[in-house]
Image 1 (cartoon, chains in turn orange, purple):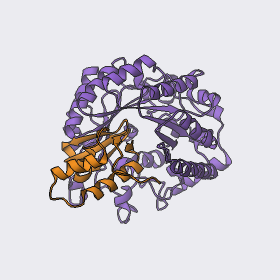
Image 2 (tube, each protein chain N blue to C red; image 1 turned 120 degrees about the vertical axis):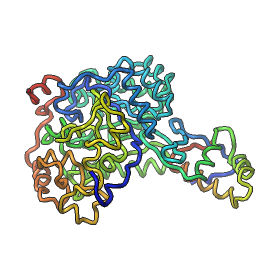
Image 3 (tube, rainbow over the protein chains, first blue to last red; image 1 turned 90 degrees about the vertical axis):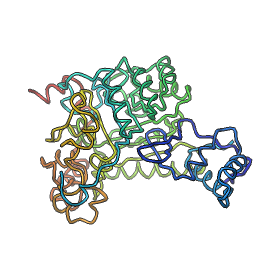
Image 4 (tube, chains in turn red, orange; image 1 turned 30 degrees about the horizontal axis):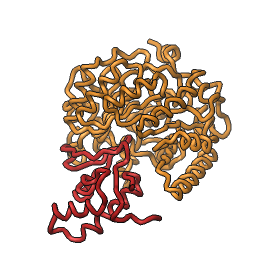
Length: 92
Length: 380
């Protein structure tokens, strides 16, 4: 298993879409015939995934947005590893 | 339905909208989930009526939209429907046999914002596929279209309905799906409603066939995981080999809203056969239909549950099973789903398993789904 590293650039897989759903009062990840409700931190992280920014840049952006949050780097790496395992994202 | 208990809880939004645009279809699959009497159904909704259905369902919270049928490609307004739905924020899925698809239409759908295409196959070899589909050109067309779907960059689900005449070729089916670069593969053992129920003796696999197929699927899952291959294999077992019923549709009127071609609103695509009055979008708003109509409240909550479900500690897990299956097998829509080992009618399931072992029907004995057969079966 290769480790997810700060230099990797994550990208949502084709056919996956992050969207705010008022009726569910949360962000969801939509994909072929499926939908996952996301918690706030997962949505905040995936919202930064644009196929251009590296994980390091995503961590920096989230630190700026949530200055009081602790250990953002660990949270981001762990979440993106799970997202990759589930084939929601690809790493470049 | 009012009264104490869970039936008082307001249902959540219908997250899934299935638009059965038409019952017309160029194929004749003997396990089609359309009603047996599809040929006598009324006029299809117009383009404007469908778009209004999408708008109202989206307002209620629907996020996934499936264009289905019949074969949705026979609707000449499909591109317009896709564009309207995508514009409202739906995730749009086209569920097709691939017959009637072309490179030009795929490109047109992509421009209209279609998110995903699911192509169904009948078998992994041309002869069986075409025999089941009732068309000698179907297989070659499906292969070409599956390749074209990927060439246009779509994510693709390949769907194989499996049964006793193709399930032994599961390895070939998986290999074909990988060759075609499917992102998801649904290996769905026939569910016995509509035409599949009529043909059950010719479709239900034996337990040994099923177990072998599941074992091979699991071996492939491990192989794919080891290679970090993104393709996901989804194996759907037929509930005829279970001892507990499925939580059908995640609960009656709980997540899923189906609109039949004539505008009838249903909690699932086979519910039309039940002795229940269902509302039509031509006459009522979807808000009324979802929250207040008799049909959508008929089996919500657990006040209606009979014994042995009522006192069962698993009732919150399976809601008494599938209403259509209970009605088809026992004639009583409120009965416990006979799949359950606790059902007084479980013997019917055991009989079907025995028939699969001892007296199955051949491929050539299956009744094909077409207008003529529908009119003969459902006279009057």
